[in-house]
Image 1 (spheres, helix red, strand yellow):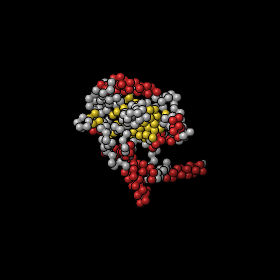
Image 2 (cartoon, one colour):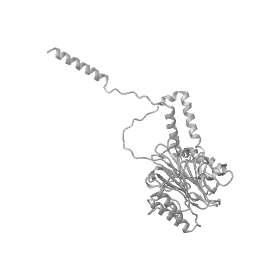
Image 3 (cartoon, rainbow, N blue to C red):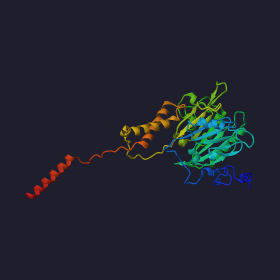
Image 4 (cartoon, helix red, strand yellow):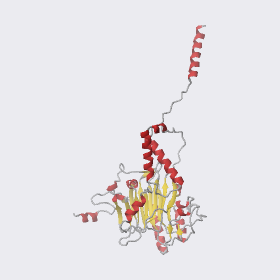
Length: 395
């Protein structure tokens, strides 16, 4: 059998003659991770949501069907350290994965229009369980994580010139997908919604915060109804920040701005989003901007005393240790210098780099145990014993 025949008989999303796990029986649209990133439990990586920050973003790139556009995207995202980047308007045809799951996508059959997908970091690629290429407007992916798995849905909603029937069909498909997701999973829906939710959240407090942007339209109201129905919250509206970090689309003239690229998360996990903002510095020749959020779960724990292990700062007096310490911090911080960030973010990153470097290079401080009984007390006890002995002898 030649290579072409082998390729035709293999299921989309898997490599010829190297079949990965079967699609999940609960949803026949799901494609298991291919053998390039094996799905064996022993080898599958996990996103550790309680100890590590997972960065999730979305970007309408307005085509990757152009020479060099994919390489430009990779280059732009290097400094942002994004783990899971949802993509809208890729304009790739068909469905599948590239480079063992680095990119997964779902597009039209023949026409180079619409198209959605994901660009995954090596960490997220290793944690990928499977993906569901629904159509050219919706794709979902599931990732192994602790303490709960993550399901991310990337969408590209119908534009303003679409009919009401197309809008309702789009939301009906989302309803069906939400109904089939594992209940314990952390669910996010991200992408270009082509809807303006505005800044007035009166009556919509459960679905959006006080820091929206612009004026609401009918499509925005439909989105908020969907969010309320599925108990979702729009993370873009939770944080107070300047307008340039809210709006996600700019008109060609630069006169008009809208916030239409949104990130929704289940209400119960809304506080797990540490920050959600637009990065205007990222450029890929699109009128949409990169939107990125940091996800880290805070679990409620019973308060109990734990001993803090303090690093031995005195070890930095050794010149070799000090040089290694400075080089490690410089290396960690070098990739972030070109990124547009707030002062608070820079301070947090620097503090984390210093803490990590101390845990790697500096030994734990040896604490001198304090005696439970002082020497004077022990001497008094000896005197008491002698007096007692003399008392017994005198009887």
